[in-house]
Image 1 (tube, rainbow, N blue to C red):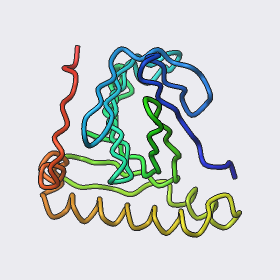
Image 2 (cartoon, rainbow, N blue to C red):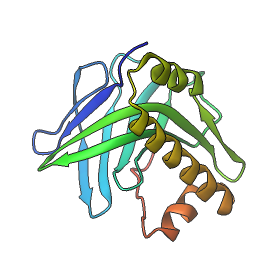
Image 3 (cartoon, helix red, strand yellow):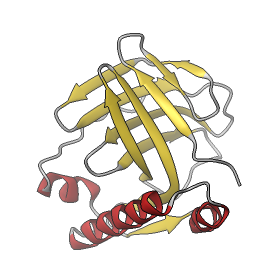
Length: 169
C-alpha cells in the first residue's frame, strides 16, 4: 500500500508538481476566496489531453474536469478527489485521502477506490483522524449532491461557491 499521494501548486512559478513528482507547466492559475483553479495540458497520457481542477480547501475536495482523447471517454462529468488542501502563501499542497467521487450530472454520484482507502487505514499509512475526516467529507459531498439532483454547480452554489471553467477546445 502506497502512502498518501501529494501534489503541489506553485502559483507564481506556474508549476504543478503532480502526484508522480513530475513538474508540469500550468497555463492558468486563478486564486479566489474559496479556492484555487488550475488548467494545464496533460503530458504523456494517452487517455486525456487536458485537465482543469478546482482545489476547495474548506470542503476537502479537488474537482477535476478531464478532457478525454477520442476512444477514451468516460461516463463522468466531474471527478472529485477527497483530500487535505493546505495553502502556504502562494503555494498550495494537496494530500490525497484515497476516496474519490465520480459525478454524473443529474444522474448520480459514485464513491470509488474504497478498497484503497480501507487498505491504507489497515496498513497504517492513513491515520485514523485523517480517515475519519475523509469519510465525513465524502458523506457531506454525496449528501449535498443528492440533495441538489446530482448537480455539482447547484450544490456548490448553495454554499456560496461558483466554479468557472475554461471552454473546451
